[in-house]
Every structure is written in structure tokens, then in C-alpha cells.
Amino acid sequence: MVDGPQGGAGTSAYDVSQSAAGEPAAQGTLFPESVLADPHGVTDQLLGYRGPAACQIAGITYRQLDYWARTNLVVPSIRGASGSGSQRLYSFKDILVLKVVKRLLDTGVSLQNIRVAVEHLRRRGVRDLARITLFSDGTTVYECTSPEEVVDLLQGGQGVFGIAVSGAMKEIAGSIRQFPPERADGGHVAAAPEDELTKRRRTRRIS
Image (cartoon, rainbow, N blue to C red; front, side, top):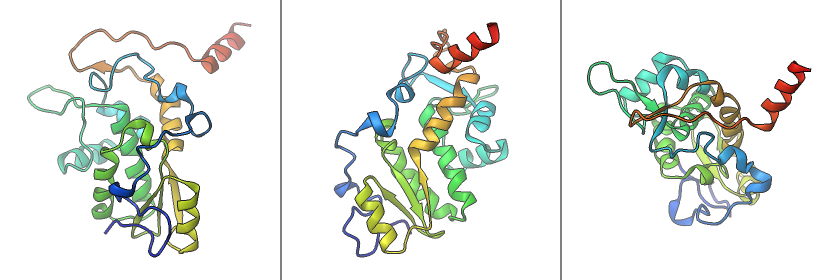
């Protein structure tokens, strides 16, 4: 069962009624705005990445991707595999959830508890997800959205390891540019603007 800290003063994990998700986040220090921005200038409802690309970005196998899709653990929100020759398309948020699921599995959390966690993550927007840190004792998954909640959790002895969702987002944002996206409507995808780090690397190679 996925629940919150026992007896702590902080917000219980996945207690939507008490969640601080509706408050504005201090994005400047927590998560760069450039990473949250859509690098290709189209909405997540249109832009997606094929299964093989999603696997490489999230660090999972295609067998895991396929199994999780067939069991409705993590399904592609852009386009599912329906009909002959159709390709699943995963959004940035889908790939983020894939990466989080992989990390939870690696730490021994059961699929049953991960499934509950995923349902709550799906309800959040990308900006809200950037504020979340997931903790687990190997059995239960807890969600924290403030330093105070982290302290309460650790003092209660429930948090053994943590996953900062913003860290996973940064990793994905750093690698996703290497893969060609597709639009669900078959339209043209404009080339992503070159980020500052890529410009510097290219300048060094030229000089």
C-alpha cells in the first residue's frame, strides 16, 4: 500500500487533498525553465517519441516497455499501438514516468505499489512533478514536496532512499534531443533550437 509518513507533521504521500501541488514552485532554483520548456515548440498532445527511443532515454529494455504498456502500468499518452504497423508514441512526461518506475523497481518496490504511485504521478503536470521527491523504505512509496516533509519522513524512519523527480527530468532533457520526435498528426516537426551547451561544444570543435 502506498501511503504517507506515519505520525509526521508533513503532507501524507499521495494525499491529493492536502497536496501543495497547486502552489507556485520556485522553479528558478529547483528546476531550470529551459528544461521545462518544450524543446520542439509543440504541445505534448502532439509530440512523441517511438518506443525504441523512449527505452534508450529512460534506460529500460523494450521488453519492459512493452510489458508495462500491455499491463497498463505506463501507457503512451500520445498514441498507442493499435492496428497493423502503428507505433506507440511517448510524451516527455511518459518517459519521465518510465524512468521513475525503473528506479523504483531497482530499489525493490513492488509493482503493486509502483502502480499506485504511477496513478498519482499521472495526475500531475510536468511543472508539479519537478517539485516532487519520492522516498521509499523498499515497501512503501512516499511523496514529499517540501523540505519540511522530507525532514518529517526521515525522522520517522520511513525514507531509506529517495528519487528527486527533477533530477530524472534533467537527465531526460539532456538526452532527449538526440532522438527524433514525431507528431501524432503526421505533421512536420521543426528542428529544436540549439541549447547553449551544444553551441559551446560545436564552437570548440570548429576552433
